[in-house]
Image 1 (cartoon, rainbow, N blue to C red):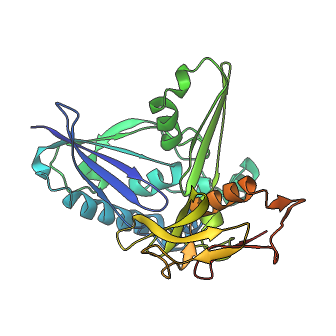
Image 2: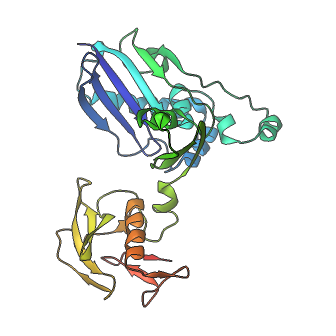
Image 3: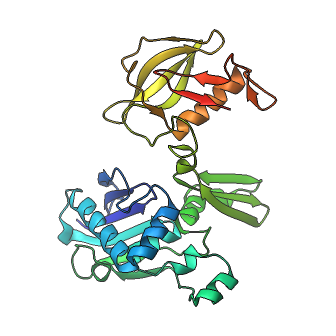
Length: 302
């Protein structure tokens, strides 16, 4: 049996699938809990790479990917092909390509610093040469990165979703730690990307945190709102029941008393609840204290 490995290197972690190349069946999946480089966003990773060097960042990332591949539980001597996807920065770190041209935007900035723009074309390379612990001859398939804002992940999103075949105006987005968006109007496609998760989780939102045990990740409507809190297995479980109109919190779910923060998805759900409950007027929450109280002291302000 010929085996392929697909890798998605994200800003917050890496996911890997082992695939039976003859049938397309996914044999196993492994996911890391975080990115191996310090920081929770692209700018942190760029800063680390500039200060520590491309070779160091590349070695750390490759070491992580090799450990991930080892957990897939397949015979690595049968791996014929590895395919990889990610934004331009993550793929550059993976391939060991300098990222100075990505860290500094604009031709004037490049000229002033003597930065040479790197080629990030699609290609088939040797997986062994990049540093992966697979057999000689194993192919590494790398999709292209067209610009800063249009990486392999954005291209995969547009291709796999059927976005390119749409006749009507269409919008598609990959809402991750770094969010890619594409808007198709006729034959024109407009793309862009922006920080998403870190912009809300733990940095710009009071009580914000990354997804982990004790995080409120959603609100479920059942006449009142039930806080969905992540358990030790990062699975959402029922927490407290909140009545925004009466401003009461009733502890009744298994995760009551266990919330320590709220994720970006929880913030989005809370905003939707505020709009449904008509608690937003003239740019402010209309609760008695101007706060939206959830459970265990977790709250959102205007």
